[in-house]
Length: 488
Length: 102
Image 1 (cartoon, helix red, strand yellow):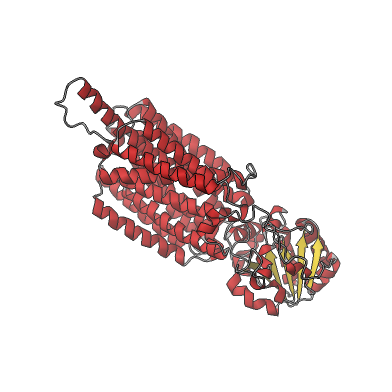
Image 2: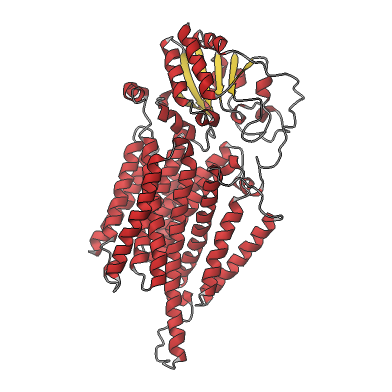
């Protein structure tokens, strides 16, 4: 039986790696997640046969509890996962990730409590005078072994912080929590908490008491909240990605505690893949990971320094004129931003694209790495509307092409086309790679109003001579464009 | 059980594997991939089942129950949203079936 279980875990690990590998190309991506899913089902099923479960005197109750817990947790996730809107995907990923982190932490809690129980039983025996029971350990470390205890504790910290932090990230992205400020001297408080946490971790390691374990988990929970609350909305994807990597790591560590190779491999693969992904995202946003944690970008008033100096003003344009401009263009580049998704305009944008394509206009989509709420999110939203992925271009591929473009249509995007990021060292965006929209012949910006964007930074692109503003709700504006093109 | 040094090798090799997989991924797949890797650490479900399976008293069973509940949410939710995102990715070669959906 053990051979069957081990072989299944091995196969599951192989399927996870191959699945992730296939997910790295749009052609095979869907097969990739299905392979990984098959691995998960296999691993879960054989676990029911594992001797740890079958040999327990409580086996019957525990089996019932396992099935019930899977039904409730899996059922909840299935329903929410099926109905979540594509725009809300980032916070849903944060939520599921938090659950994984919480699971890793609770596994550690069960292991530590079991060891604590052994130590306590030992104390009770020695009080009764039966000193002959010398096998009883005097501390949790002795009961579990040095390496296992250390990894259980480290995994517990990481998992707990990923859990409470992810829940906060979910609440913030879902609009349930808007506060960015928590306490004065937040960084100092976090540092003190971290030190206290290490203290309790040492206490857990060297004693067999219950109190340090409870305090240890409690403080880790609070720390996860305190770390995440001050993070600005624009930085949330980096945090979610980081927590994803941390959960992976925690799962890997708890896998060592349980002696489960599938958990070690899958967890560590995700841990390292997630760390790299976090780094890539932070780089695309011109932020370092420590920056994300220790400064509240987009939270306080980062006033656009050079707002009024450029002198120009926004020039309005009517949809009819834009329709004509685009219908007779040689190339149109569409730059969608999160505003387009909020206005649910992506289907209309695709309709417009098809109309223009029929008229012989070359239409391309330009996607900034951080368009949407996280890298690649905009691609998902466009894919939902039916836009084929070979019309969609990354920033590096399209930036040189703006010079050959007749019309660049900016819908609901702002910071990612802000030329101040290239020219103005005083701008908070300075250094962030942006799309060179201003190099095209005409720039049309569809925008709700005259205000600033997600990060609150002024955008000099809107004031340029070749820029025209089409004010209004994204969906309505694109609808007008469709009518205008149709009437030609 | 996996001995200390062997586990260290597994950690190292799995770490490099994860790095290799991600380093060649186009930006357009970053969100689905984050979601996919989120699903893969749903393997914690296996650990959670064992943790509940070895529970001997009410407290341990209660905590183990929470572990399985959370882990199942991670695994199932991660799969559902990843699959939903990936099934939408189509090339213009299959334009007809994609456009006709709405």
